[in-house]
Length: 165
Image (cartoon, rainbow, N blue to C red; front, side, top):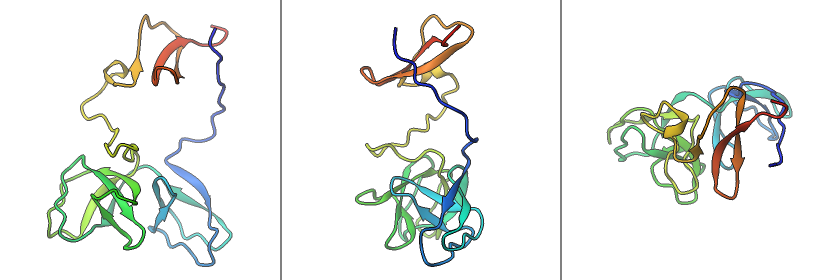
């Protein structure tokens, strides 16, 4: 029998607790660089204080000038300029475009809930409404009380009976 890894529910996850480790206030609405993704400060966060950052949702953000962005394209945060760009080299994954943004536009709608994967493609599966339609999910012989378990050898989520079921 496969080893079952247990988890304890903590919170929904749209916003997370975040401690401001800087010497300056992080103003509400600021993009926060989380190394491998971004968040958006939900409130002003004083130095050393615990605050809230959004890690899901669609936000209008300043974008690099002269970029034509199409809905669904993976986007990145350039910490040096403080702007969103399509160029991923050395940039922080931000999410994907939630709407088209023309070259002359100064902002782009960014869905930060699904940042681009390491390969640079946005994992948000457009038009997918069933687990069985996802490439990294393998469902077979589903039954009541099944749970999804990640199998690292196949790199897929597979359904299994719940512990004690």
